[in-house]
Image (cartoon, rainbow, N blue to C red; front, side):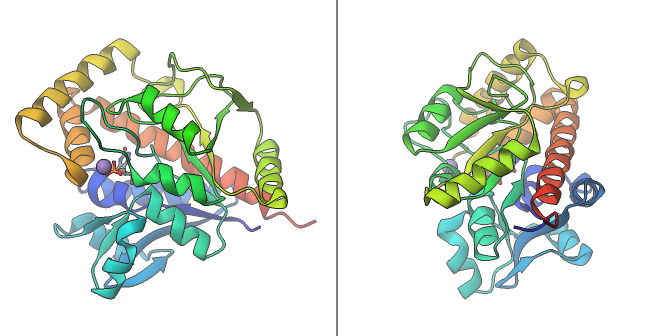
Amino acid sequence: MDRRVALESTVIAHGLPFPRNIEIAAEMEREVQEKGGIPKTIAIINGRISVGLSPEEISLLGRSENVMKVGTAEIAYATALKKNAATTVSATMAIAKMNGISVFSTGGIGGVHRDIDWDVSQDIIELSKTDIVVISAGVKSILDVQKTLEFLETFQVTVVGYKTDYFPLFHCKDSPYRLNLRVDSPEEVEAILKEKRRLGLSGGILLANPIPATSSIEFETLESLVSKAITIAKRDNVSGKALTPYLLEKLSSLSEGRTLEANIALLKNNAALGGEIASRMGRER
Ligand code: PSU
Ligand code: MN
């Protein structure tokens, strides 16, 4: 295993507003480097899978209006038809695996949406298949967290709290959802991944890393913001791939930027932990 850390591009192209998105992409790469990791931001540029975007490529994704958002199901479409595409957690995992990368830092994974008959992210399916460590701050509270956790269990994803017994709620470090598994060091994460591979067990490790306390938003405040945002999304008939970016944007405007600042803090925190884990995995023996 080596020191590379995969970073996704959907958060740049669709999850964060311009021009902060471009700055944050660079800050995440710096966080990885400061901990001794090698950042590899992943996307599809003009049909070519790029593992380790140049600053120009990051800027292109951050500025353009017509960048696709692709999960694993859409990778081949984007490459065959020469598209510019940002990769979600599922697609980034699949491409990281193709390239032998074992660690991937993101913000939050997709999951089961609230109050909708059926909208479950491809991220969960990819996590059930691909043996990579995915560091996230839990899932967005715009999702149905309980159902998301149940789905993760059904699909045999190893969900582990990093220095916590609870599944964090993205913008909020605390949560009522207790986890069965907990680790307290990068060494333990590495040991679990190695063991999965030794035993031939498929599937990822979802490492739940809570947002730093100083940036965490209180549970009640967040809940009321989320229910307002969902009401607005329903009124505006937003669904499918557009839903997550729409809700994130609404949350940010309703909270006067507080959720955006929280989002940035947790992205950097996850990048740093990814760097720590990867630099440990890549050390010489
Ligand atoms: N969390 C964020 N911003 C994002 C995402 C998650 O704060 O942009 C992205 C990730 O790329 C994740 C995707 O994989 O949303 C899930 O989208 P969907 O629900 O359409 O599968
Ligand atoms: Mn969906």
